[in-house]
Image (tube, rainbow, N blue to C red; front, side, top):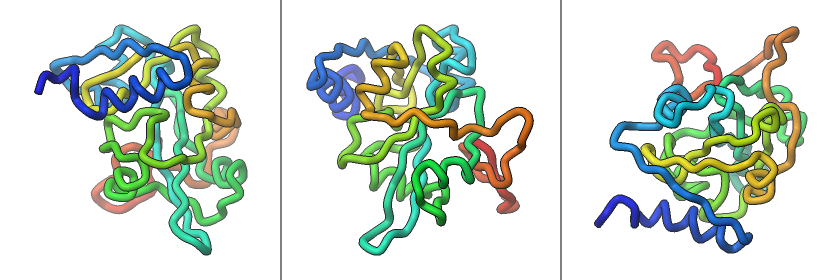
Length: 186
C-alpha cells in the first residue's frame, strides 16, 4: 500500500476533518521518531515539535491513560502532571500500554485520533510558536498546525506540566528509559 494511504495517517486526517480542519501530512524516508529527528526533518526549532507522551494511573475501574503534549525542548514534571490530572500514582506508560490506549505506536502517536477518548494536557510553551509540528500516526510522518488549532483538535487542557528552569522536577520522565532503570526525562 502506498505510504500516504497508511490507515494510521487516514485516521489522523479523518479526525481533523470531523472538526473542520485539513492537515497536510508530510512523510519522510527517514524517521521522525524523536523530537530532534522531527525538528531536523522539517527545519524547525526543537521547541516547535510536539511530543505526545502517554502516562497511566490505576483507578478503581481501570488503568486511566493521559496524553501529555509537550514542547520538544521541555521535560515533563510528573509531579505537576499528577497535580493537574488529580492522579497521584501517574507513571509513564509502557510501549504496549501506550499502543493499547491510543491505537498508535510510540514515535508516531498523534495528539488526537486515538482509538478511545483520552484526557489530553498541553504544555503552554507550545503557544510561543505560530506553528508546531506533531506526529501524524507513523514514526516518519508529521503535520504542521497552529497551537490553538492543535488544542482544539486534541480537546486539550493547557496547563504547566514541564519542569521549570528554577525548580527541577522531583521526578521526571523521558522518551527512552535508561538501561539501569534510573528515572528518565521527557
